[in-house]
Length: 626
Image 1: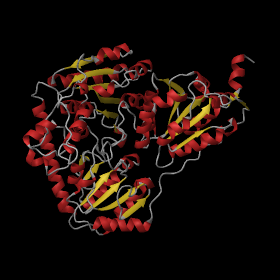
Image 2 (image 1 turned 45 degrees about the vertical axis):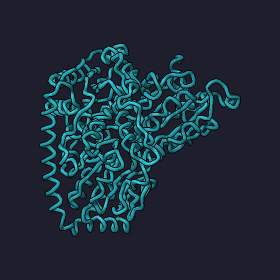
Image 3 (image 1 turned 135 degrees about the vertical axis):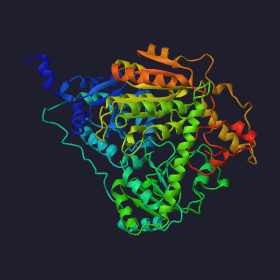
Image 4 (image 1 turned 45 degrees about the horizontal axis):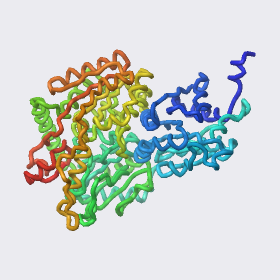
């Protein structure tokens, strides 16, 4: 018997990990190599384990890539990180995963168990670092409990609501010899398809059917449950507008349905404006309920007290979390919504057809205004985001990729054009055709694109041909090392850098703070300058194409004029699809863009819009309506 055969016949405690991954069908482990992790990384070199180690150059990239893999596959993303710096480096995307309910299992290789109490190099209380943003955080106490801890951890990551789990494991525990027959039997998997209480379902259906003017808010649990058609049926039965939660992680409602109204705005008075004319709100899968920068109790709650609230979600914490819910259903959305729809459908509201007709007319007007806005943008000397969004839409349509693309969104200051123009409709795409995160910690999207591209088929059984990542210039500079892994693994992604040479999102945040507090008694604060130098990154200017090439990316282009955007996007997609390698578009965008609608029309609709400069608004005495 050769040494190689002997080596393959031996089993170690680290092989319990591969038993679980094989059982669930997980084929990737993401991480940054460290000495403690080598026993686990070494296990990926055996073909029978059917797992590849995806080497990243920063732990937050590894976590982000695992998030993308998890979102596409519907299975936990697995990450191996190194002691204290490893988990500390990954906190930003761990927080994003926690807020976005993404299933992760993070294996952190602690220092030697016999030594750790003496505070050796890099050692700390790892569980304490991670537990705030995990469903479960545990340090293994003996090699014998590894099977128990792994089974429990993967069960919890996959149980509704999904979320990250953290395991600290002294590195030497992975190298204990076990017998060939000593294996993990399996992983308990809890079905997410449970229905809510029948009495509360009936109560909710009655409240919704009797509403004078209902409104629906669709949170991430809707998209994760693949419940588009069920929520569309309810919206049609009620004649209710549907808004998405701010910073939705996935597409929670199809944008080609006339009930769709875009995302909730991100400011207190704007959210109040959305709700003020409605008497009943159906908060469906709505977890991130206070996605605002500034809140003042003196200005009243985000949802006015005159609005009666009905909840449905699979996370008990989100039921009536911030407000009293007159009916609160704890259940799976896809399994429970048909029961609500059936009750309402037996005696639908008489006013629903009139409300639906009004929403259809508003939708036609919205389409006309967006087209006019696009035409105006094409006449400018600078590039507006709407031009990029429409170019992507056109190329996706021409190539018949509506069912086979994923758009990864971190162009944080320009969400509306992409959410409106991209084909995120019921028959053309799926909830995971759009990917963002609810956490808001920047620098996640480029890493996520790696995991998304690795998973060639999404959990809804649709093959992904094209992955596009639009990201702000500031966000892209968090982890440009991502491009090394993309080149190393030959992962073809179209990266579009929305390069306005400033931290536009932070400027918008500053504008909101100034607006909120400049007239508040006891505050009256104003910045020294309306144009802070520290929020600009233009001296010297970044060349993202050459930056990417330094990390091994093959090609790209700088785009300076709106008339060149369409051909640049076409070239970039051609390159990615033909070569299987990444392409970088450095799109030099305008620092400010006007709103697409006139002042008079802005107060009559919901849909989010591109930003208008705050100080210009103040000078014109224009209300901040989003």
